[in-house]
Length: 363
Image (cartoon, rainbow, N blue to C red):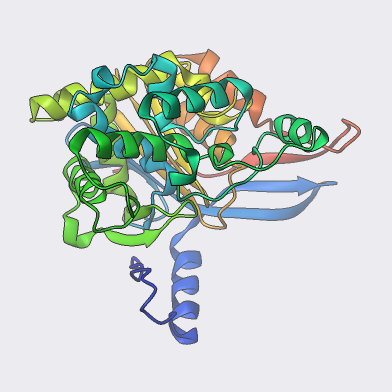
């Protein structure tokens, strides 16, 4: 049985305690252990979750847990949210560099080259960063943050990891002549268009997509993992998209992601390490959601770690790639490099183990 999400609207009351307890029980009952953490030979943590893999027909071909589990895409939707900008040909209108275009799909870490791209976008758009709804913050990258704090520099809105997405949507609004006021609201024309594209790519009807609000202020989409996988399948295999203009825009988005992977986050994180492989389109989101697709194999996967942890992504993705017989060992090795099975303490001593334990069941 699959749990449906409630609409996350400010005028709606929170779910009742019985409803929350029921949802939690269903999540545990339907999920399967993905990764176990051992410390001193004793099991310390169990990370449950769901995995869905689809083929080019959209049929579920691999699963662990519930492939129809409904959850929010969060930042895994960023490649989709960038599509309207490219769909209208605005990549040529504003004169953005490839790096500035790539950061629209990013959960960046506000490293110097990220900030350079963001400031370049603002200058070309003639916008002040105060137009951004995402709050001022320090970079997620620890070194970048510590440098700014040490230099007594203030927090900025463009340091927010979603600011590239916001500037991309603002550029779309300027190009279309839409108001920049409340560009983040679910009923704004830009957000309505994004929702339509998300529905078309995922094959999840608009009325069935659950709408919540992300930490950065944008609408987020809740749908079954299978539909998320279908959307990423089309990102990787755009020949499956009937609309020629949409197909062309998708090619632009994914080409940029593969060509400029370090713009998507940081080189020590999973997204760039998957996107270095030109055969893969990948993007993760907050609270344990990760989506990726393989171009040649014409397969796509969506996984959810139900406790919301992201640490398990590399070892879980590596396990998926191994189980399906993926040929690029270098990509698998990079997953184990950034998410090693060995757990080390602050002194670098091995004190435990992360162990992937799930089996992909073929349908």
